[in-house]
Amino acid sequence: MLFTRDVELGLQAAVGLVNTLPDVTDSGEDGLATMEQLDTWFEREAFTGERRRDARELSSMRALRERLRGLWEADTDEQAVERVNAMLRDGQALPQVVDHDGVGWHIHATRADAPLADRVMVEIAMDWVDVLRQGERPRMKTCAADDCDAVLVDFSRNRSKRFCDVGNCGNRMNVRAFRARGAAAEEESR
Ligand SMILES: [Zn+2]
Ligand SMILES: [Zn+2]
Image (tube, rainbow, N blue to C red; front, side, top):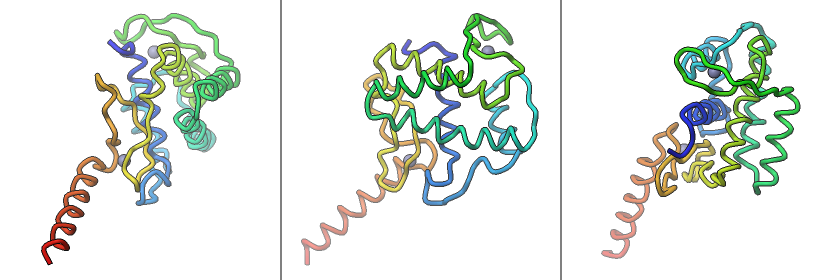
């Protein structure tokens, strides 16, 4: 097992959040523009604790996305560490071992009544602690498609995953390469 299950889920939740940014794909659609979209994300990722469901909660979650993307964009481990530590400081992290909903023992480093964006930020920073400690930052990738900036976590055995799960990018790039080869062959036969 690469990461513990809760870390894996946390990293996936982070990916889902970053990939709602409007400039991730060509569509330019913001996937976190409304409270309903935040509700959907929250339920899907099985986050716990209090929700305020007000404009401030939504705007701080929207703002958090860029900060999380900064983890994926770090050029070195040191830079990622700096960003993770800043998140832990800003979220006033205080790790406590907890269990709920049959998850098994895991760490919550914020109070359940802290603002949602702080809880999510600290949780994801804690997940990144594991990534860095295990030397697995190379698994934290940006989609290899030339027209896509979505982020992904590569959980594959040999770190071979290249494309995100957002825009059907793997298939799209295959089709494009296939067409390019076809066009080149046609050129040659003329
Ligand atoms: Zn929990
Ligand atoms: Zn992609």
